[in-house]
Length: 169
Image: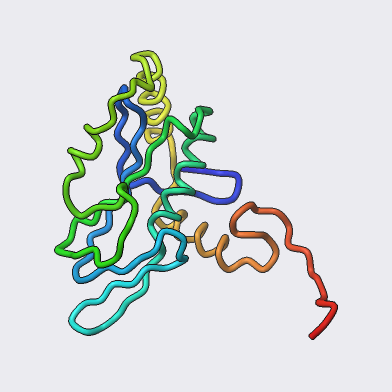
């Protein structure tokens, strides 16, 4: 999905009268250690440690892009991180990060957020985009590399970086 500073790839999108649910799926085994605010989380598997991007940060960006794309209020969009592999979440994490109970979590929302017209608008907008887009996974990966390796633009807001010289040290 295009945005003003690259692309965002959404694994699953559930459209419901209770809101839109972005589901970021991670197929990871082992022990998972993370913190809501950390840039990276850690997977521990057979005594080896591997780092991966904080999926909550991914879903934050996806939420912004989807809200902008559909021109809807961000509060209508809920994010979920679901670990589908044989893993154990070893640190306290928000309730929207889980390795079981995805359906139960989504069904726990009871406040009606969207009427049937809103649901149809969202579904048709997404279907129209998906059927006409030529964006590929390769394009998305290249966009990520450009956004995160650029020394000219801020990876968060796309503003031009300003060179500054420290007063001391």
